[in-house]
Length: 114
Image 1 (cartoon, rainbow, N blue to C red):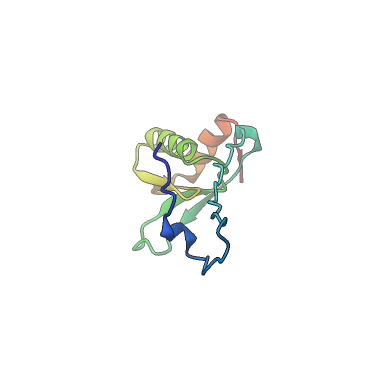
Image 2: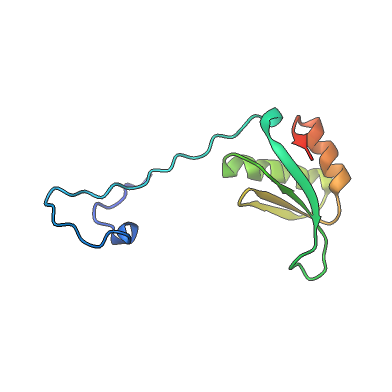
């Protein structure tokens, strides 16, 4: 992994000026969120049509964890439903109305589904 440059001004936009010679800017090292176990996840499966040109999508929200795990779950759901979709920002979008199938698949995997 590449190391951050010592004097990267874009990360210090909130700092106006410091008179201290020993001042060093603290970078926010956000640790990635731990992925909860399947039984601890509380996923919400809904049908959504807003801002999609009238097309229906099945929306799975409420996932807590790393982006890689979200994408893996999204890929499994898309493969089992035989349709396209995407997984980003804590949500999985499955093209079409597959609420009952997605709920069944998630329950089979051990998730709590609402």
